Length: 54
Image (cartoon, rainbow, N blue to C red; front, top):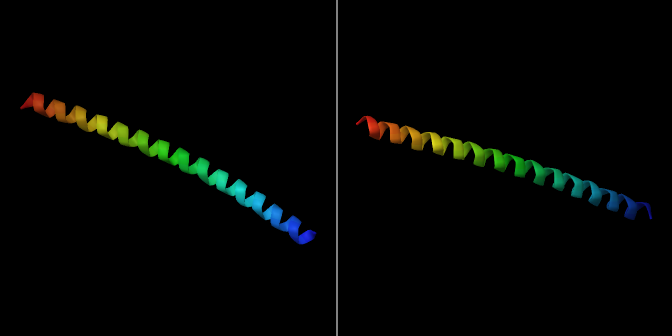
């Protein structure tokens, strides 16, 4: 009985860790998308200004 309880506790801990990893990955991906969007907008604005100055 103790062995089954230990296995069940291990599975719950593993599930909790996987949920935390999924949340962290989601936050990181959102941050990367945000930075990518900001850099893309900056590049587009800089390109437009350069073309206006030519």
